[in-house]
Image (cartoon, rainbow, N blue to C red; front, side, top):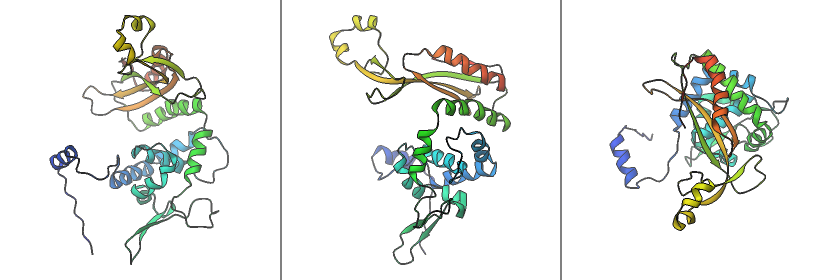
Amino acid sequence: MGLVIFEQNKPFIIQSLRNGEFDYMEAASEVFEADFFRFIKARALLDELAETYPKPREKEDVPFWFYLAGNLSMRLHGVHAFDAFPMVVRSGGMLQAFGPQAGRKTVHPETGDTTIFCEGFNQKNHYDRQTPCDQDFLRKVAKDTDAHALMRWFNEDGVRMFQRHQAFDPEGIFIGDASYLFVPDNPNYECSIKLLFDEHNHPVSQKQYRKMTDEQKSRCQWRRCYKMVTLLHTNRTLDFFLFVAVRVVSGKAHECPVLYDLSLFNNSISGPGFSSRS
């Protein structure tokens, strides 16, 4: 029997990272992810969120709680391309948390290779599956979900769920922020806009551009973008940070009216305190 022992040694890990002594890194560990999904599944949080999700279709071959879990798992691993979902399943903790319903890992007795076997949810598979659902299913549902309905679901139903589970600090402190989201220079990105940015990705007005030196101007570039306006909840000791609202708008839109609209709804739920940061 092979025995592997893990010991926590943060100084050793930090020094190894500084020296470049690592082969592979992930944003989430298998144990952490399994504990996370066991917790939110046991508290019925996934089912609660799935009930109010703006589903783009009526028929559910795959339960929507698993669609949400698949997206959460990808975010934990820091990946956004849906074709990476099989890798996430193999290296993550979802299967441990959800048990045989999602799938199971087996070790070949002769080679020692780990194989994943998933029955799937819709009883339509006539071949061995390596993931509980196809990554193309996740992609199509994400693509078909209305963007405005999705943001409304997160900002309203998500906040109500946080409130029911007492996630808010009684003082009700919120931080408003706006960040630019850069996308490829393709006009098919609806409502996106091209703006001039300096080398630090700060927008440059025509007045500012005229005052620049030739060297400074040479480092400016036009970039297509959106603006993401967020509302972050915390307490005075900064023990936690909780995103409670988000809205993606055109890059030229001013964030103040958007923040005001977001804060009105959240303050009506969780308390009067609102702190704004630009």
